[in-house]
Length: 193
Image (spheres, rainbow, N blue to C red):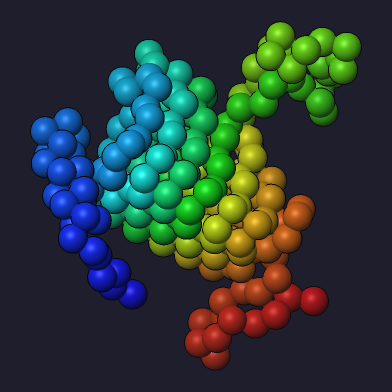
């Protein structure tokens, strides 16, 4: 689908393109405003296109967010990467998605966080997130710490993803689960029962 831009949108995109080529030469188009905390932690981004109001909260001293080639992100995508978030090539992320490798507190290990402690005072716990190549992430999806998404997956709108998912599956729901998988023998998506 190719968008038709009004004159003001076209001028805004032209301005963003000029700033992109000065500030992040490898990217295709970073629409403004964009917020990147810890810019040194960002790598890759060849051919990256973002919507407006995207936000990356990164560790700042080491490489914690890698964005593969030719990725596209919609407006208001928010990524938190304090340990490692790795996004493959040709990934399409719709608007208002949240991807994080970080939690305020621990809730499943031996050293659990107390509800008597304010969330901002709880220790940060991280677990890497891996998103494979050619993944499509629908509007408002949330991908939580420790998630591993295989190549060719589709994540349904409004899904909350936690865990590991094999290649070429459609994942949807809250919590998300596999609802279809690609069957190469019949060249079709098959519903999982």
